[in-house]
Length: 387
Image 1 (cartoon, rainbow, N blue to C red):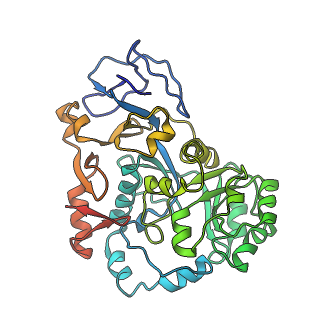
Image 2 (image 1 turned 30 degrees about the vertical axis):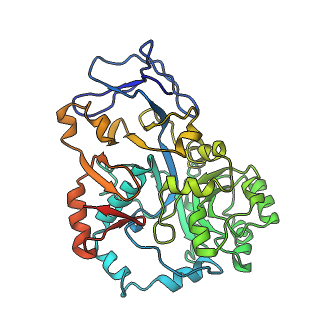
Image 3 (image 1 turned 120 degrees about the vertical axis):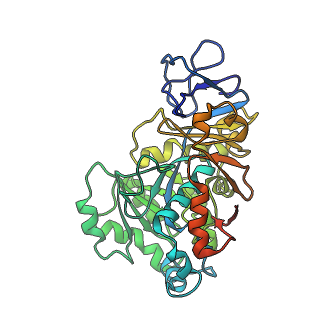
């Protein structure tokens, strides 16, 4: 919604539940948002005139701890297994130095990569880090899901699927390649009994016509990461699959194979699909695939003259990101409206090709911790971090 919309802010920087519009004291969220008609408490307001308010974006596939890494490999490769064997040299530079950065620090940087592009929820395809992904972590990390890495690197995949709670989605890298091995993987997954309505396969470049029919029959979903596919394999999912109507989400993967954030990924994906479809693939689509509960407390504001959410995302200047009712990112202009007590917890973050923003994170300490092992030329998903 554009116009003189406002959102109530408490002295602690916590955004209170409910929406407030220009005219009658309420704001009704649409285009995939969650409508509400609740009155707001009396406290200072944040004027969002000229901004479009949208639900927070969802990145359905990332490996958060690998987003300070440079892109590795010299593709194209026939499949992801060949890429992994080629690049995995943990005792050599640059992997050696990056692994010396504490994992918690790397996870925080991965969260900030997502925050900069308006992401409020991330599906982290690795173990849930209980001690890191707490209330102070910048984004919500999906916890109620099950996963395996891939058929090649998880010998107990079938057992993991059987042990998964029946209400959880199950994510697995599958058909990540263009060769016969990748093209067979979907059938192999089905033969293991691990392909059903809970299954979301990540990548799917090797999906054949028969594989697509099988996915429809099993009501499985696809998580699409085009930048990673194009860099690693020299191709991505076929247009037949993209236009098939199967449930799909758009995601970034990590900087190891794709030095992009979700806004970059949307720009790449626009070469294949229309904006309205892509908007659904970063909001309601992944919410359904990941079986996420609805939340009125995760939302973003974009400075734009666009009239639709889909248009806004392609000229996006993310001005505000609110996660669980708490301001996590805000533009310097909007931050001037905040109480001083709320501004004190924010620090400036400047990243190449993104406008400077204030974030609810100890940016200075995160820079120091990473620079201790990587030097001053820090890159976040390929973009230079200005310290």
